[in-house]
Length: 296
Image 1 (tube, rainbow, N blue to C red):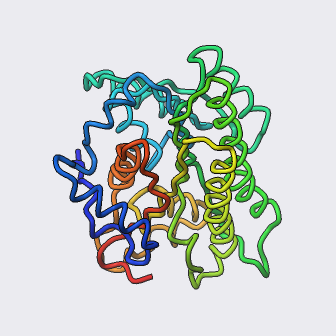
Image 2: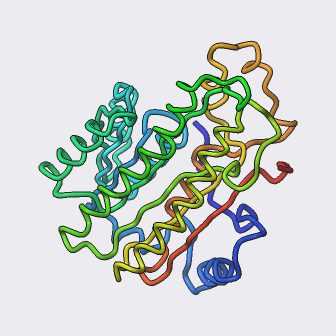
């Protein structure tokens, strides 16, 4: 089993806004601060987090880390069996939180609404919403299938919007004023990769970047202290490439990491706890992270 690595300052992208940089410097230099294991994580113990796409990769790592910190985590995915296995692992490890698997097809709004209704009836509501689920299909703009484009927008954009809306409404009706919404974005949401196979995928991630800023503005207009953040990793060692080229295994098996060590899913999970551990008056709007040797 790989050891968890803390999020180091070098992981944060050099082009963050001045306010974001000042915030990060404050967090990193304040007395007694530990980026991923701050005492502030204790305030989330026993509270409810929703993690979408929690069956594999980054989502599974995030769910596991939040359970380790004592949270009650609802992990949703279409393949709920893998979440059940992860829940058993968390229990065996003696983590103080609990992982609650929930089967949900995020391309169907009725499934999402049913999930939030179940969370309300069983756990009162959501305090933290991690919009992690995402997928890609190799469907270029000039020759791609509409069905592939549609599924990418359904999961990467529309499901994210619906979960964000429902999470906010859940917080509002319970007078939860310190909740957190985090979008797991991508570096492809900040620059277009020169590969036709992922151009539409990039468009969905650019949408996430815009939606994060729109959410922040609407939360301010609502005069709430609920925070909104976005984490954009570069190349991460997950099943993403294998799933992208599931019909072309010869490409997936030779897909290069450009002779570099990629990020691990746990690195992104540590970035999530980094954001959550900020004091309630501090909002970390954007974290961009990538392998040291990644150029794009």
